Image (cartoon, rainbow, N blue to C red; front, side):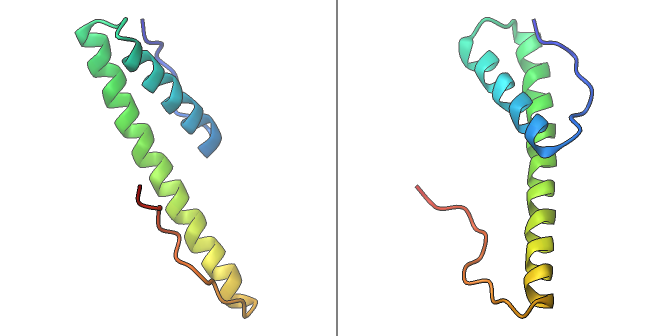
Length: 80
């Protein structure tokens, strides 16, 4: 049964919870209702992680620009 947890404090804890949710959903041990709750929580966490990563990317670019360092590559995910 999924546990109701408060919003993770940082990126690492959000990612860890997202990994837990993925494992729970992949196990197939949850009821349909629990799976829907987990899926919803997972989407929320994924959005939060994406926001935090985008903010970190912007911060890195700003720091680099202030220090006259050129960022050689964009922070785009590699395509498989």
